[in-house]
Amino acid sequence: MPRWTSLALALALLAGAGDALAQTEHGKMGVFDPEMLWKQTDLGKKYNADLSETRDRLQANIDKKRDEMDGLSDKLRQQQASLSDDKVQQMQKDIQNKRIELDRLNDDAKREMSQQLNDVQGRFQQMLVETLDVFGKEKAFNLILDKSVIAYNSPQIDITQDLIAKFNDMHKVPPTPAAKAPVKKAPEKPKETPNP
Image (cartoon, rainbow, N blue to C red):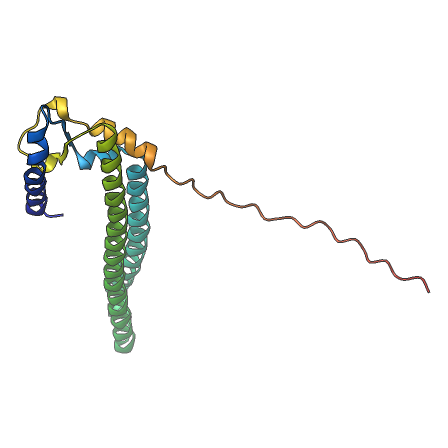
């Protein structure tokens, strides 16, 4: 979310919460760091690990294709003088095809990473909103602000660590599916032949 949008949202929240704060003698406020929640909650760590795993897998495919292209280019440079014109043209065509495949792989990788990042950030954001709602009501907060949209806050009102604990409590990391062992079939009994 762009910073100016977050600031506008925070100002709107402040304006809307002004009446509530004015009505209470002591308005209870809290500030949290969403980046810390992303990095330190159990689910945030899992999402980051999943993203890293996807990035590494995609990069390995790209590196393999680049190595194939570089290998062909090196082979052409080393053997060009001894090859026929037809063979040189064929190798140049093969290198060009590898370059096209590499470009496609890069584009696909960017698209896949972007889609996965948007997906997990969207889910995480939704869970964060739910957590803030429950936590704010439980602890009787009048206002909870995103630390990135305010210029200063007293460390005493930073509730990031408490929110991390609440988030972990509300949103458990799903267990990873264990590899299933193949089901062994009992040996079949030989069929009895009917007596004549």
